[in-house]
Image 1 (cartoon, rainbow, N blue to C red):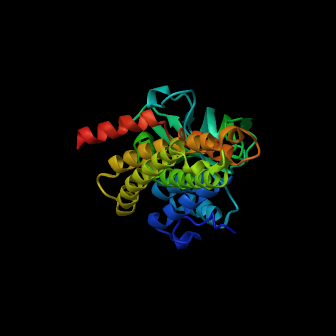
Image 2: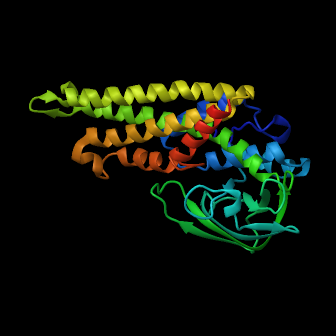
Image 3: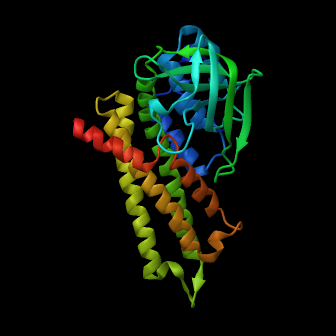
Length: 321
């Protein structure tokens, strides 16, 4: 009923033909609700990859299912800790056969199809493969993350049937483009989360009394709320830049995406942490919802790359400009 299947999938494939500007509105509200659904994996990554690189047959096979909610997609990139580079990839796709292991894969345990980043001896060092996860040659093992509401998995491919997505040997270039799109959308999800955390902290401070007065009247609490508001506002301003660049296909999308991502990570983590601190000892218990936003902020801070990685991308983009 929340309309999580509403994507940028064109209407000819059963979608609603939404623009990226409309999509960021949904992303923000999902962040505010801390929604435990596979929207980001299916929409930000899997559907975007298939729309950008897929053949007509691949689009017809999966996009209508994404649009009506009958299929879930995921994006499998990581294989070990730290930043992923083409020379670190060990998963291979040769002759339509996929072998290797990917971990952690967001929503991998419940997904029907995966976009898998594989090593390649040609081009930019990587190739994207589209894999139906219902086959016996795919093994799914749950991986517990800090956010229990978003499942992750280890996907092992033992001779699984796979289709090449896009051009062989051009996968890393495609991954960088997908990351820019996802970074903007994740940023808006983080902004929704940060704003909700600020609201929770404010409401609790107004209603909690100590020494005969609301704790919201104490300067220390006012400072916390003010700093949260400043970081949230700065992140929103940067995210507007990212949303414009994404929707317009601007040449500075890489810089805009990195700017949005860095500011949103900082704002969401700060807001989630200060929300707990404002609640005091009760903020660390299961009695309040602070934990959900803290867990989600931590998880999203590493989705599609850490803050350090995106800071590096921002510096590189500014230097190139």
